[in-house]
Length: 573
Ligand code: ADP
Ligand code: MG
Image 1 (cartoon, rainbow, N blue to C red):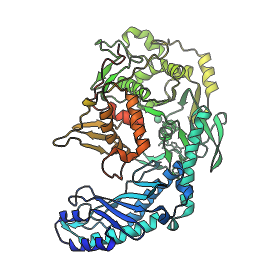
Image 2 (image 1 turned 60 degrees about the vertical axis):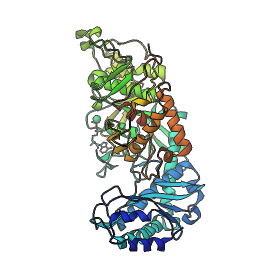
Image 3 (image 1 turned 90 degrees about the vertical axis):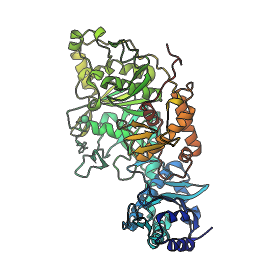
Image 4 (image 1 turned 180 degrees about the vertical axis):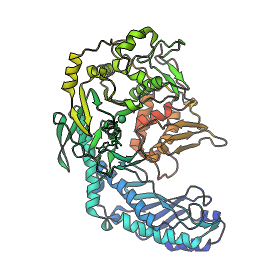
């Protein structure tokens, strides 16, 4: 294998040549203590940067076994190493030259700790870090000496500072491993205790802004559980941790505007993921099958049975196999719920701020004025108990606007100045005293939920001459062939790497969807493949920018693909 000096000589030789001469450096090079692999060389200075890898034997990296032998710890350590390498490398980045010249980048996880292909650590595998470098140029002329400095001096220096255990702060690394293991242990405790979420005392929930997910800097009020809901859980590292346990069933979060209701619900949404130390939500965990539900008017819907919520449309359209290119607020919210259930959701998270009013409530006066026969919508309030009692699907609902929900709630939490109070008893007493005359509507219970079998041929990833073109745009969209799948309403996609992986996984869905397999079976198979062979198995190249995603978000992307067709005839009426 050529070594560092060979790479250096090659780069000096191609100095001043036209940019395509860089293609020559593709390959593996042995460096002092590691191998540098150049997997892909960009075609010009403005193209996506070149993709590289470092492989370092575990003995050289020197990480003690307790940091990588167990999955939770390993994931914490990997997220940290990727972030740390990114920070160190950014100090070396020299932005002189055209396009992406001199940029060293890594696709590290953000606040959430996510399994990522940017950093791999396993006992049967060298420590591997995948990153990008913008190979430098002036115009389209190779800057060979500056490339040699980046690849043969800066990168090895960044590797030395960020991948050798002896150069790292051992306490910090231990801490990231332990915090992540504790979070997984905490989530595992939920089921045993019949809880669907836990929010530790002292947690910091508010964020800097809608686009800055770091913890609020200015005097955040730490979370403090009401005594009635306080539970104590013993964790492997942190020991006994106390906080608010939210029981299964139907939970209302009430309270005046601006008192922190949505902030709590948002923390529960991302509580399906672990958080990095310092985030404030390291010990906020939610049932892993929780799905945020919102109204999303304008979305596409393919053959979903929304008849539990919507029936007898004036146009006579069948709502047991409902399709539309432009769903209304209420139909989109109904479809979001049914699709989440189809994918295996056990907890619905709903916020009045992002719900359709007519989907959530229909009060007594409206019932008097508009007869049920004239209202296709059966509101959520009449279905939320059926979901729990028949299907064991819990709901946490932020509802400051309607006390009608008191009747259907098992637990009521009031937020007051960002502090939760257990008001279940008070809410019940009010419901007893001031009986609502509203009638329960719709058929009793929730009813059957029908499987759908997608047709693979309705997913067309081709674009121009390419048989498959899949790209993603931040957290907002997947470009699948000629179709743009809008996922901006899907709250629990938190990292662009997840959406990239979801885009690739859709290709796998396409292969599996034969018009017979149910969507749930397809999701199982995709998950099994990733469990067995890793995220790498999603693409035929070496990718450093894929992050783990959940089946719910993959289903969400599929369900929003505007060409998706469902095979009729499978348990259809
Ligand atoms: P609600 O949904 O009840 O109307 P929000 O959750 O939107 O309220 O919170 C209102 C504002 O208060 C937001 O700007 C949020 O960042 C801030 N906030 C929420 N929780 C806290 C807290 N614990 N400490 C300080 N500020 C908070
Ligand atoms: Mg709100």
